Amino acid sequence: MITRQFVDRQKLQEFHPFTRLRTLLEDIPAGRSCLEDGQVINLSIGEPQTQPPAFVAEEIEKAAKGWSKYPLSKGTPDYLAACAHWLGQRYKLPENFIDPTKHILAVPGTREGLFMTALTVLSTPKKDSEAPVFLTPNPCYHVYTGAAAAAAAEVVTVSATKESGYLPDYTTVPEEILERTELCVLCSPSNPEGAVAEPQRIKDLISLARKHDFVVVFDECYAEIYTDTAPQSALEIAREMEVVSDTAQSNTQNDSLANILVFHSLSKRSSAAGLRCGFIAGDEKWISMINTTCQVGGAGVPIPVQAAGTRLWQDEEHVNINRALYKQNFDLAQKILGQSIPVEIPAGGFCLWLDVGNGIEVTKKLWKDTGIRVMPGAFMSHANNDGVTPGDRYIRLALVYDPNFMEKAFMSIRNILDIKQDVGIND
Image 1 (cartoon, rainbow, N blue to C red):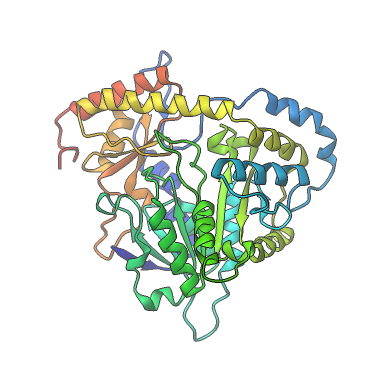
Image 2: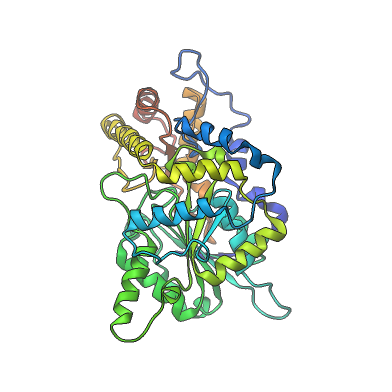
């Protein structure tokens, strides 16, 4: 299913999922939760509840003199070097494949980076001409749509359903739309479903982007949270494509990154959502242009924050601990919720995408009876002309608490799913 629409910048709340969720639940009293104090349990937002390593505070303190200085928009040399080194180690890239002075830009989390990228890449619509197209998955992270709205682009969504492996197949997009496409996004592991793109899908998308000369954002902010096999990056695939190309003709490393921008963040990987620290890596031309946009209207990552970020990118121990914790949570979800409904454990990310028949009705019932707040899949999705979305049947659970906490929450959710009432669960 492909949908096409323009989003009014003055009506962003109409698609903002958390605004819609507040509106949905505001007149429904929250039930008493399974916690001793009965406080509500928020599983609607992907905000890790574990703490980042203690050295984060130490590094910020050591770099405290930097609070009085405006940060360089591009990033400190140490931070950029740490990001480049991490990419090389994680994805086994050849030395100097990523030049930290040319191919990396520090950003305050992927959200801000995505927004600035859209403002940079998407051209200003000209009078009497069609607007540029931004291709996104459906369902998707709401910032993609918001960024398109800010740039006055047409949002064209491609459904990511169970049948498509919970990922969009952009090769199905009509040629006339591809000719107008300027920006496209692929999230892997995907949000909300946790699907991981296979190498061929990434390769096909890079080839499609170069054929039609549009930029692909590979949102890889969940890449370090996976169940069994580490997800591959678009950078790895680009390197492989470069090697194949080199057998036929001369190529350069800069060419190998053409049309590619990869996003990473410490928010999920390091449980440091409040740090607001990440980076973009890829096409030198676009890195430079996005940096210019940030210089005009953005805020650089503070120097002490970059100092902490540098240390986090250099440390893997805390990442392994986090990954093991999320694995425990998924095992518990399978054990407990799997007694009531089919549970698909995702290949990556820390969210559970549950088919409950009617996501909105189940969301209301969970809130009313158990004080648990979840995200209806419909609120992360775009509707077709009949008002149907790929997320209608689903709820998203963010498994962001420790396993003991999540076990109690799963028990409460299962009790609701076991109740055979006409709330759409068994539709």
